[in-house]
Image (tube, rainbow, N blue to C red; front, side):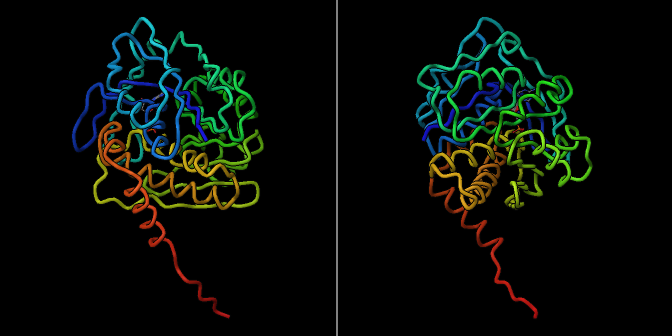
Length: 305
Ligand code: AMP
């Protein structure tokens, strides 16, 4: 089943303790599509400026990403500049230039309007709401956000929550949005505003999924080299939703497995700058990493009576 993603399509400049990259492909929709396209067909909607190297998106088209919903506008592309110091869990935003995103109104092509799975990648919550007005009721609507929007568009974001089934955000963002220190309480606050499921990402400490009655945890894959954490969250979402869309089922068991696939895809994202790693891997690499996860967390219960 196809997945529709709407989000930022960026040119990122990133500095980590291991190197720097200038004006490389980035953005929430780009990372999501690179990851989810290893599972299913992806329909991508967003905007790029006249300076965008569109030919570099060909690699995604070859992976089955339908790029016909990407608008090309006069002006500068969305640009994000960030830095990670030794704590690779938190990015320091040095500059955000919205460029053509400041006048963007998403236009969902007719052929994308019935996608059963929709991911509202990190962009202005007003645009995320606009997308929902254009699509037929999907099986699952998931949404991501970040501190930038929590600070500048809080009430729109809260309106949006009532319309989504699942929210993904990192632990600092969950605390900022809900003003709760405790993550269990933060998840309950979010669920009370709409989504039945909340995924709180904790970088190298894994991810927690809160459902209506249960909590599921998946660790992050212990890599010996984390090169650039940018995009891990969107790659997580791509693995999570890509897996659900491929199986077509949103049962509890599948949601749990999807969290592990999400964690696996997040771990690939951080091994290189930009989306490079996703263009190198295939189904076999994903299966191998998921079975490594399985070995890492399985144990036999020995109940002491
Ligand atoms: P993450 O998966 O959270 O690491 O997301 C990384 C991507 O988010 C980068 O490639 C940035 O281009 C993009 N990004 C950063 N700030 C924003 C923003 N305010 N709105 C939309 N996308 C952003």
